Image 1 (cartoon, rainbow, N blue to C red):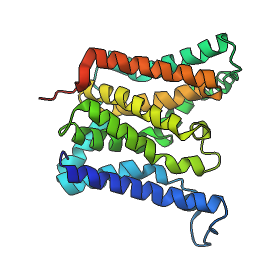
Image 2 (cartoon, helix red, strand yellow; image 1 turned 180 degrees about the horizontal axis):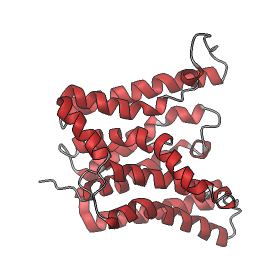
Image 3 (tube, rainbow, N blue to C red; image 1 turned 90 degrees about the horizontal axis):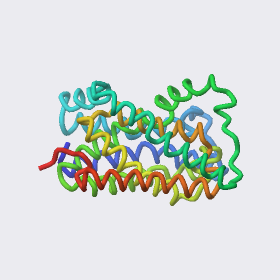
Image 4 (cartoon, rainbow, N blue to C red; image 1 turned 135 degrees about the vertical axis):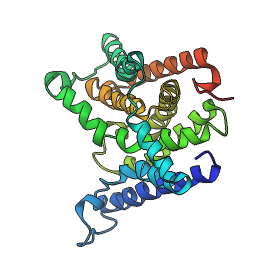
Length: 268
């Protein structure tokens, strides 16, 4: 999966599946197109679009690596024996950064709304599970990290890979900015999410490398990011959003200071 053609095929499949469902959903939602009577609502709404990276990862792995590559992909998706410290990083790093941004913004006078999650604490653990399964991580990380990062790091510097994967990851979300009620991330300017995915690609790519390619830990870290934004509505104000970016930038700067351009990868 380190050949350029395999990465190109992966991206074509991932974007083809997701955009092929999301963009029609946009046109259905704004009334440009009428929803055909024969089209199931789950397709008309674009709900299946987010599975594009996982589907593309499995297909590309099968085509270019056969059954062993698919088995390896799924093996990395359940790779849990990585050490307690890395589990703590995956679960706590981003909630700490985002939670601190939320608290500091509030202390500085920003009109940040209270957390709905803490008003209903029973929802907090269930939200983590729901986000893991249906909120992006399971649907995406096998593709962004398992195929794209894994393959590209055999060709170019991991730091460059983080930039490429982050930009493509951000671009993949573009149709969601045209869909109503797609979520808080899509009520903000597109550049905010785009910049976020680049920074997050550094952090997730670093964790992926340090855990020997554990996609499970990459999925948990991705989950903790979305979960933290559920717990701490930091993006509801401009100051909160700015502090959020400062926190991510500091985390990325520390990673580069400690690991250099290799981001913890065992490259020659």
